Length: 474
Image (tube, rainbow, N blue to C red; front, side, top):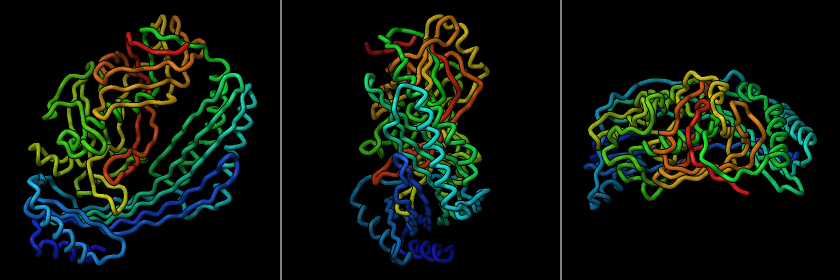
């Protein structure tokens, strides 16, 4: 593909483009589904095609197709850029160094080596384990949906600044939705997500049957044993699943430079960060939030972005102060900076835009016991059942799922649905201690128009917040 893409670039430049990039991308995916113990139709999907992006007199155009000659695509892109000259807005790119590199990740157990019966056996074992576990509580498992997915993404990217990237990345993902019911207490649901850059070996490491059995049994206990919580101002400890989501939503999304510059305003929203993205204090010095695509084995892994810029960790919050924004070459040029390798696309038909990768709160040095030992009357929220946040990423709400009362430094009874609702600045500034553990959850982060869901990790340690107003219900 290199010769074909290079010919398309040369043709775009000959037609007047001052910059051009061409990408061939092939995505293969396999999905296996078990619904209420019954195998659903599994799928194998192939998406492959070429995209061209050009700049002509400061105006950008992007085109993609899976059945057109790349030379014809280049002509179409240039024509579109010329037609957009009537629009006053222009784009530029920074002078970041672009790489000529390969990034080939090989799974220890590739999906192509798997026997379908082995996959079905694992999913059936997980279903049986969950069904057996719920019998230990006075509840019933009325709904289970499990999806095991494997993805392989191959890219060849060239640009007229000399960049060349050849990459191949395998990913594995598992998602489960579990619904448990008690006739007198109602229903409760849990979503479990795992993801990694790996093959079948990652799934074996997740020990899905054991995880599902534990989660279903816990759901039963929440329904039958959790006491009501009326609300109070109290100290709380948040689990990694919650603080990871907070890091993603309240540090990652607000730090996307295209939000600040207005491009994402009508699509994924705006940002509460200042107009120029200047550093501003948001928490205590112990607080650091990082977005790092270079974590080996992570769901959001990449070594070079889709503009051939070498990726690196980005310090979104450094010692309690909002620091870096996430930049591609266009946003960096608009702000007089350099790209930090944040340009990503999901499929060949999607334009590369500014995205997160693996966003997490850096751990501290406290054990879990140390986090709760001096809390006289507080709450431990291990995970959540629902959440929401405004489009500027400033006001947010998290409803706890598995939650416990903390009294005199010890975990006591389960409590039902405590609600954390506060502003981003209030939440971050209330953190006074960080656990030494670091755990990640996986997700597909949606953004753009058309929508792109890219693989990411969210994570962090257990964290302690002081004097937080918590809502509840009778």
